[in-house]
Length: 417
Image 1 (cartoon, helix red, strand yellow):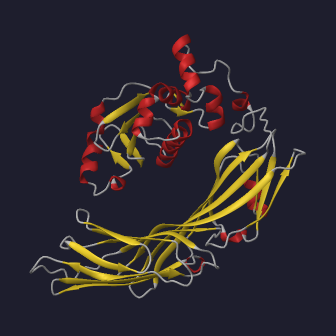
Image 2 (cartoon, one colour):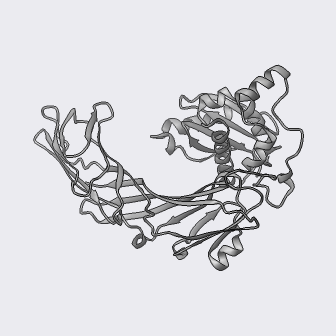
């Protein structure tokens, strides 16, 4: 993989940071990207790969920032996309945020990180543990020392882990309290038609880890039902052969936070829909009628929380008057969005919202069938049925604190009317 340059573009279309490795590439190379950005309905709809006469432009969109990588030769696009996501993840760890203002406030550290992460256009040091040893994260003390002494916060000593078999873990780690926590987070994407039939459903899951263990621990994690996991991707620390042979995750963990595994379940009969939405929305005779009911479904007794229903109304609608049994509603006359904040669904009180919409005299929108967007969160439930069986530690003789948490959230969850 060879990257010539990376441009950081904000939501206004301004290039606020650029980094070149082999030679300086003119900003005019981004003109075709700006054209695509203008034509796209939303920033997420900009094509991730754009071909010009001389270059390939590969982009991602995060935190209202477009990262545009420029390559002169044909490369694997996913490598470049993954690298740019790694850059933004590193910024988030260093600055607690990766917004435009955070990047501008730490511009020197940003350039130092980019210089270490790419060497002459090729990825070099992308593991957070190595980077934090090379470049000290910006703190008030570090900034004051740098201003007084004039020294940069770059280490002159090569980190030992960069030359080891486990470059993702720094050496000599010691903690007074040894802890390992794992969060199994699943996002449910679903399309449900007006009759309540599931048209499409899939689950995107991650196992996020926060590990603070002394020494060089060797962990193994087994699942009660590992056969659910077909489409998976792993952190480099996972021993792939052990997973293929025994369906056990065996790994020496990085120090701190990282994503151990990502998985995708698209078999529809394995995707349980945790909430139901019954909606009737129609428009006639200059008036609109709305009747929406929401309730739990296949949640194994767990509470559905943070429930929000969003209905994009037709542009002819000028106002909404609703009555809710639970929560409150708002209508934005500019974006034409009706938002119903339910919060927690109580088992014995089914949330309902009924009311009417006003239309200008003489206007008609009989064929309008708005798609309802649903947000929710369920703690201590993995809707796929995935469950950790046990977690064992080897190579160290202390007993750590261990914990596993399950969270199910709505991804792109739509209900047609």
